[in-house]
Image 1 (cartoon, one colour):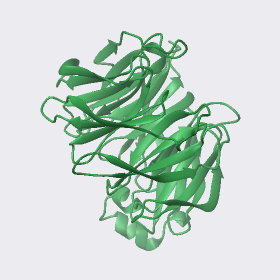
Image 2 (cartoon, helix red, strand yellow; image 1 turned 135 degrees about the vertical axis):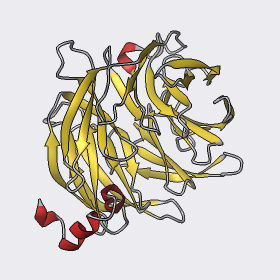
Image 3 (tube, helix red, strand yellow; image 1 turned 120 degrees about the vertical axis):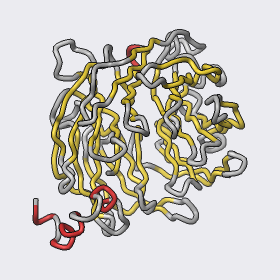
Image 4 (cartoon, helix red, strand yellow; image 1 turned 90 degrees about the horizontal axis):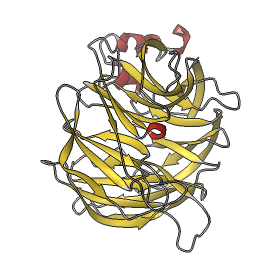
Length: 379
């Protein structure tokens, strides 16, 4: 692997944090991709992203378990955590695994594994202080908390909370379906988007790794919305939910003391007049927090909004085709110059150049094949 790293780069690594160096614009960085175990998928893909050429190259694949899905880093970027549809443990349940990241190559080495206690783990996030890993278990209507040891290993679950309730969609909302779990920047609260109950459930995180319903324990969105993914603005004043079933994005005012959410506005993610079946999926801010992007599966597009940091309101800028089917997940490079979209049904990662002033996107002509790609994150 030494040929991949210049002599100057090695010298710099001796005095500089490698994760910061890899993320610098104009250099090569490491991207990790999760994938479902179908159509020849190998597992977690470790990719080199050349930010000068806008190209990807496969470096390593990790074949542990079945269907590694969402991925998350420890705050210091020393470890990667992944959920699995099925782990290597004998209980047959979903799992979460910890991997040590090699600081020179970005390669992964498994450290340990824990069962999530049920099936259908859909999302993983890490406490900003590095204390806990949280999994939202779509198939089991639950949320699991795992303490993280000082060596990056996952301890056995400290809490396992089952959701209750339902909503109006007879196919998709007969019971709870927790789809993502997002901690606040200070780690005091955890926001769980529950597609089945049309609620974003709010928990207070206790020091021992227990979840306690917050003073205002949830915010209810319009019936049939199906909350899926959630992001909090860097200023902490506003948050945004993409709702899968209604293909809408909802802006919230955040009460930093109590964690409570108040709806500001609710907007369609689709062009005016579009009436075909489509489902909202993923959502991310640009690095400068001036724009927010979200994906539509069916319309097969990225929708672009400009964010008003004073009011929290959004202005639609436009749509860009994802050049594939079922864009389940995407990422924006730390430099802000690229957007990478994973189209699950067409097995392609499409790279877009991003105008950092206007927020608009343009495909750079590069695509990379990853069967059933489900998650993309940059070291």
